[in-house]
Length: 203
Ligand code: GLN
Image 1 (cartoon, helix red, strand yellow):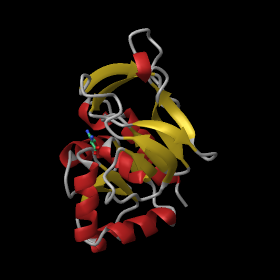
Image 2: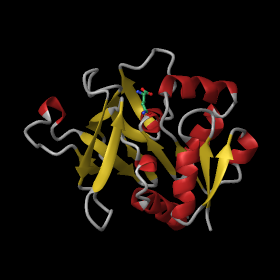
Image 3: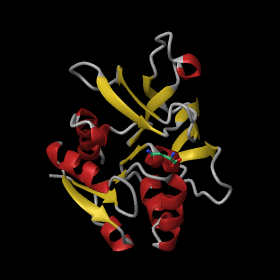
């Protein structure tokens, strides 16, 4: 079984670990550079990206993580994790660090205050067996994607979606996967399975 780390500084670490185990991986919490060197892939959980970015710095994980992902370590970020993986975050704090692992621009808390959290079903490219039920919590969306980025899911243009219609909420670039929502919260491990496959296929 591949060993997949879950960055365990803040956020919904246990939920990701449980889903990774169900998806066929061994989950390992990562808080130290030494632990990072033991994993075949890494998950960046949802939580609060400014807090996580500060903790990455104080736990001396920021540069090692950046380097390993740049060297090809597969990574999966949900919500705050997506924000950290992005090249650029709009409405971020000026001192927020970016891992620059995905050629995307994200907007934090993009769906607005009135719609703090919501749920919906999404078509998800590469996930078989019907739509994915997506839980959004103060979620970002992706405003811009670079050439190497594949769009995997968008908000459906349902009429009630308003400004959120067609917004990009899941992407992949090589072995880096990110969702604006929380697949770790719904008991459906198909997105985690997709990530475990990326880990298994990595050279
Ligand atoms: N709004 C949070 C942030 O900007 C992300 C929320 C989440 O991960 N559920 O980091």
